[in-house]
Image 1 (tube, rainbow, N blue to C red):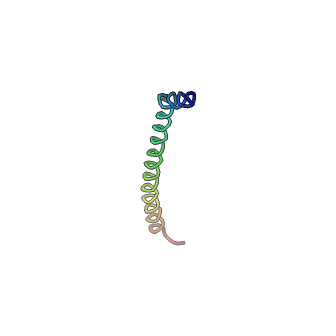
Image 2 (cartoon, one colour):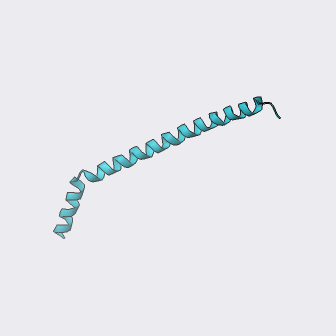
Image 3 (cartoon, helix red, strand yellow):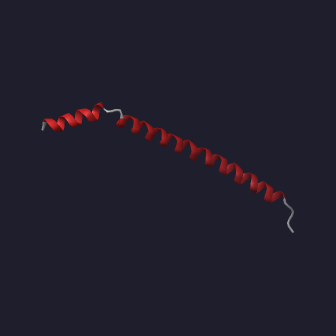
Length: 59
């Protein structure tokens, strides 16, 4: 039992767990920002192409 408790103490003292969690949070924030930017840019591009399509003469 003391070996198990020793392993838990080493795990809690280790820096690897919090570092991985921080990277996961950063990745999630990057994904959220990228999706927001793509959505905003996508609607602007769609509007631009609609305006171009309206301005072109029909043949």
